Structure formats: C-alpha cells, structure tokens
Amino acid sequence: MADLTVRLTETACVSAPFKLSDGTHLSTYFDEFRLASDPALLHDTARALADLVPTNAQALAGIELGGIPLVVALSAATGLPAVFVRRLPKLYGSHRQIEGADITGLRTVLVDDVVRSGSQLLTMARTLRMTGSPITDAVCILERPLGGRQTLAEHRVTLHSLLTEADLPVRQAGDAA
Image (tube, rainbow, N blue to C red; front, side):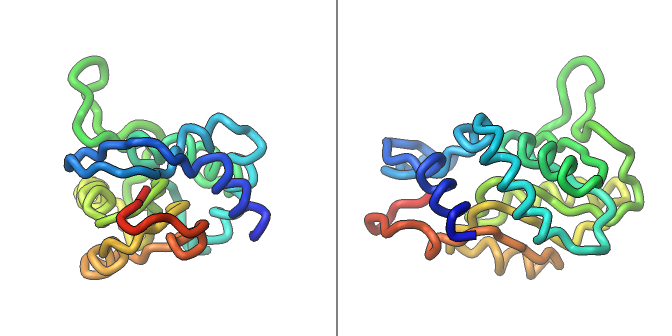
C-alpha cells in the first residue's frame, strides 16, 4: 500500500491554483484525471479499492465525473455491475440521471474520487435510494477531514477511504483536494 500511496501522490497530487465549485481556492488538489489516464495506476488503485467494497455489495455507482473512471475500473476488478450517476438528469437523449445496469433492489456502493463534506455522495445516495437501491456504503480514494464521514454516517452510509489526508505528504495549512 505504501508504494501505491507514493504513486498516487506523485501522479495525482498537484500543486497549482484550483477553484472548487463553492468558490474556495486551493493551492494543491487531487487530480483524478491524472490517475485515470495512467492505466497501470488506475488498475492498481481499483484492486486496492476492491478490498474496501463490502462483501455483501451487489452493484457499484460512480458519481459524475470523478467517480466514473474509478467505477469502471472497480467494476472490472470486482465483477460487480456498475451504474453512472449524473448530478441532474440528461437534458436530451435518454433523459436519465442514472445510466448503466439495472440496480433496482441491489445493495449498491457509491464510488467517488475525493470526499470532503460528503454532500455530493449524500445527494447521490438519496437519488439511488429513491430508485429502490439500498445504499449503505461508499468508497473513495481520498478522504479530507471536512466532516464527510460524519455527515454520511448520520444518513446511514459508511465511508471506506483508501487514503486520508494524513497519508499524504505534508502540505501547507488550508490546502485540500
């Protein structure tokens, strides 16, 4: 695991200006696209994430956009069917918010790259629960200590993270992915 942490840090932890959707500015961030574009690293990360997927899981749900390449790789590593969840329904074509396998009634695990506050995963858990998919777990690559684990737990979702901020090299105060 130590080697994977080093590889993830070297490849995906970027020191550059970055603006989050809430307007917060960061000087370092986790770039999931650098991870997803490295086939060997994506494969190894998916195999490590597979160990975090509960044994009773029946399906996986990748969250737009960072969770999509991860859920594809994790589906291949686990053999579980996958769906892809948009924040909003598509405005053309299928008009769907959830694409992929039929997971109605299946114990589904949410998949995302970074968890901060947990609000995005919580929104997606609600969406999937409304379709009849029990959601009790979520997996991510990186967990930042911004309350996400607690928020999810309050809504009966257990977070399983591959890495936490403490696993990364020391950064300046205020930096986050």
